[in-house]
Picture 1 (cartoon, rainbow, N blue to C red):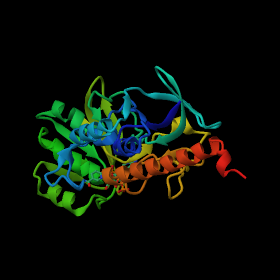
Picture 2 (cartoon, protein in one colour):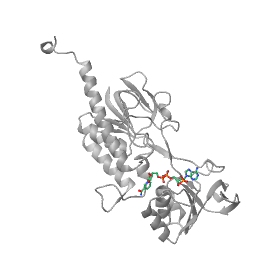
Picture 3 (cartoon, helix red, strand yellow):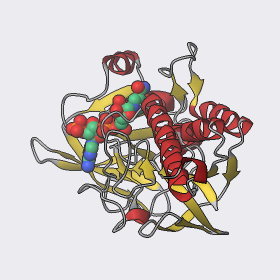
Picture 4 (spheres, protein in one colour):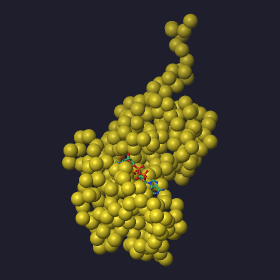
Length: 317
Ligand code: NAP
């Protein structure tokens, strides 16, 4: 029987692990298939306090993991395939290799990139369509690319891609960026960045490799094909909550509903990070949520222990 299991290895899960481990709960963390979560696919992290020179996403993951293990977190490099949170504690958590029972669960399964949902996208993933510049940028040395989106991710990763590509065209559905001013200014200064405003991608074209995209000007309705070597998509995220459907309350987009202490609709089950937070979505806020969830889990386990222990004769009436 585990005291607390933590599902997910991004900043939320790893921070929960650090706090739970330091509370002597010997947490078991199941990493999931995306080690480090989204931060591990981020090129530069420049706004996490304590790192004035910045660091890469993978470096941040390694450091957090080391810190969690140092205090006694046990890490399982596996993926959760099923849970039973309806009749607990104990709750049941199933991975590819094992079935666990646990008194408390912290869900930090994060979110995944939203897809465009246009013809050609799925067929050409890994063949010119990507959601991770850090992972795939290197393959586009000397090529021309399209980045879709107008937020911080599109600009940050678009700027990273200029290290390899001859030109990075940022396709945005409006004529104003959502990204913050620092990244906007950097993008404006970069000669390899070209903005294509008021435009959406309607198809990704290619047979075995991306050859072109079909673009549509949303103001004029004009649609045309543009030759391109690769497409990087940064249009937001969807929460990874399919395992909890029907067991935990979630909103219409699948984000877990939590109270202000990160309790889900089932006592003993907590959520931390982008699996419930659709607003802040920062490594630092996810880490903060991880801390809060672990502290609440600790309180929950202490109360559970109190309920299970017989009251000593000396203090019973
Ligand atoms: P985001 O801020 O939600 O931006 C998504 C972008 O994609 C928006 O410009 C949106 O257009 C566009 N979009 C959404 N659906 C679309 C569709 N179906 N077709 C075409 N375009 C679509 O997502 P994000 O950029 O991934 O950022 C997520 C969070 O992480 C934010 O809070 C951001 O500040 C943070 N972040 C911070 C940094 C940093 O500080 N350096 C770096 C990366 C991310 P509209 O603008 O028209 O809605």
